[in-house]
Length: 280
Image 1 (tube, rainbow, N blue to C red):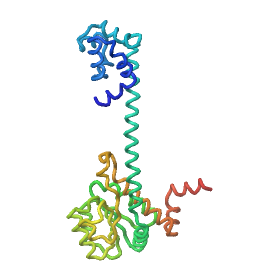
Image 2: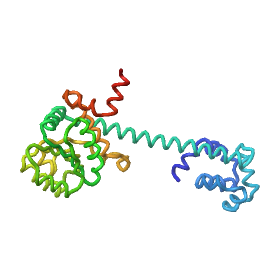
Image 3: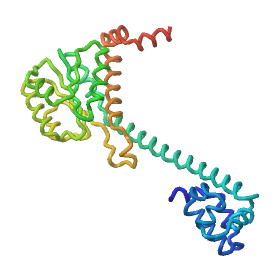
Image 4: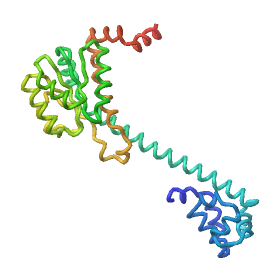
């Protein structure tokens, strides 16, 4: 209702400017228009007269008094102005969301430490096998990241269930690397698995919202992603996007710093081959 009232800017300005000419009947019509514009648009003169408790003729006379040929023209103008305001409101909402995304993106890149990216690349290249762990809501992003890094010719597997993590943790070796995705870093079951992994001397990299958590205590390196809780569009923003952006930074580091990874990527990635053909 608040936005509907706000939408009647031009038409209501005209009506307010003529307020000293209105009768009590006119005011009843004005109030109905302001409070229930959609009902006003949907009703015929007869229906509106019944709802407002005035005569049909009063509705038509009011429309003519405020400068229209009749009720139809008044309703047409009202509809156009409501549509225009709705577009403005939507645009403003999109703009705020875009601003929030920009804030988070900037925060992410400020949090990224180039030396940590280099360390992770070197450890991943040394590892015989890499596990990207994403449980619950992080399952999809773990699978996407796994698919991405297999394009570099590495043995990368996604772990998306607790049972699979527990099993792999019990068999972990010093030749394996675990890249863990957890927003809070405070899942006790996850921390227990990490405790077993670290006892087997596997390298652990953690992606989290928090630098200090029960899980980060087991990590060799922690990558931070920005928190969304303080932003107006918190419920709208997909946090996994920023994890994928971090993975893009790590992936780019491989392409820039490791020749074999770049060659493998160009050899087996269909879209990389297409890009090369377009460049030629």
